[in-house]
Amino acid sequence: MSGVEAAVSGGFDVVVLDLGLPDLDGAEALRMIRAVADVPVVVATARDDETEIVRLLDAGADDYVVKPYSAEHLEARLRAVLRRSGSEPEQRTMTVGEIAVDLDGQQVTFRGQSLELTAREFELLAYLVERPGRMVSKRQLLAEVWHQPYGGADKTVDVHLSWLRKKLGETAAEPRYIHTRRGVGVRLIDPDS
Image 1 (spheres, rainbow, N blue to C red):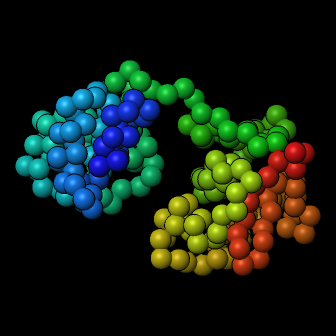
Image 2 (cartoon, rainbow, N blue to C red):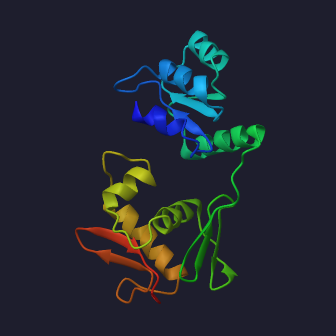
Image 3 (tube, rainbow, N blue to C red):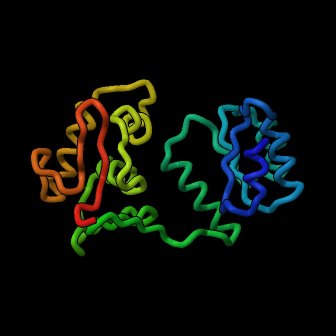
């Protein structure tokens, strides 16, 4: 219920609603949100019954995405809904030291110069830059960046961190931005703060 209260509080640009809520039916949550707020709602669920989709769109959902879907797919649908609603947020750029990451435009600059990253390197850096100074486990990175919630090869993370470090002009032995603590995780810091 607190999720519905938060959704109608006016503090969100869009709501992503899963129908499989633990204490409330998602369709009922949609009805409650629509009763008091105009916030765009995107239903994201595994239910793919066409009758259900039509019923929820008619009940006020702005879009409907069926699992499984990629983060990029969901983000594109959210951007489309925000464009249609006229409440598309301004471009989000996060900075840590001399690293600037344009999260929406998927551009990175380092020391004022464009930095060429692969899609996965960008996702990894964006995940870290949104959590400056916070230690993030490799398991979290595998789940959130590689979408492997049940673990995977830690070496995958290590390899991508190594590539990022090289592009930032640092090494694991002499880190400036990307710091790893063996057995704990990795964090991105501003070396000048």
